[in-house]
Length: 451
Image (cartoon, one colour):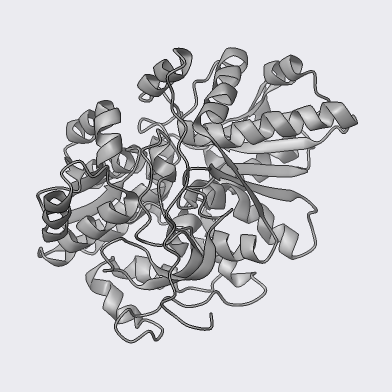
């Protein structure tokens, strides 16, 4: 381990050997997923036709640490992990703030985001089980790209349903997936009964993650030797991502820093969960006094305006019901450029922690986050993904508050991916043509009474 002034590195021998499962440390068990047919806790056996067996076992596990298989550990080295932690000194100077700002940089791997941390694990467990085909959804294309790469690594096939708005906005992501050997379809697609039904009703449907999930699940359960792989939301996905937060813990120790504020963006919750949950475990044990800040789009305000209740994880109502903060599975997500944030619900773990007051959340418009992203690019040199720009907006605002109040906070955020395939959105912002969208027509569910 070493620090070069701006960057803090770990050696490859310091990659975490275990994933951290916060379910072991929550004050109470999470509300269980419900079977949509009976509204009773779902039998894990029913999930085995959808997910690899080991992933189902991890989903319901209360074991605090789960060992990373050797094959996945070697894949992490191949990515490569660990990723660097940077001190944002140029940004600090620009803002004239006494705050010390650090960011974890997850955009250094070939897929360009944090997503391979779980994609490689999920592809491995499916390949080990003898599964030949994986289906999945993707919003901005970061998850689809990661799973396509991971599937190629472990020698299985992938079929990706990409939200139509992003499919058209980000053709480079489709090309990446296809180059790695995956098939990519604009969702709603003509590949599934549900997709064809939606296209018939509205040929210009911009799609959503909820729709794409329905298509991917339908594809998986109607084809032999095929399973579904989810890029966010579920417990096991957030757990795989905790390699991020565990690395950050070690990196901050090198420079003798303790975080005052931990920040990330939330679409389904995987990158913020993976980054923050190891620290949240300390907070729950009284060993850390820090703020945890989740940042979302004001066009899809699933935690700032959502209802904490049971809802379907998908628009076609094929999945179990999850207790989460949600706008309703029928919410029509506006076509914002942060495609990874266009989801009606939120991970049950993150929803629980926000609902109970352990985390706070904030929402921002497109123009506000691209202004922040541009400041970051011109000071730190990295063009961030639109998703990551949401937490950068908060970080800048918080650092300016520190300047106003002369409070030298330590602010740490997860820069979850690069924006090099989002340049059309930057072009719109630079030319003054980027549009903001209003959040309207919420369809809060009332599926389970008294919850």
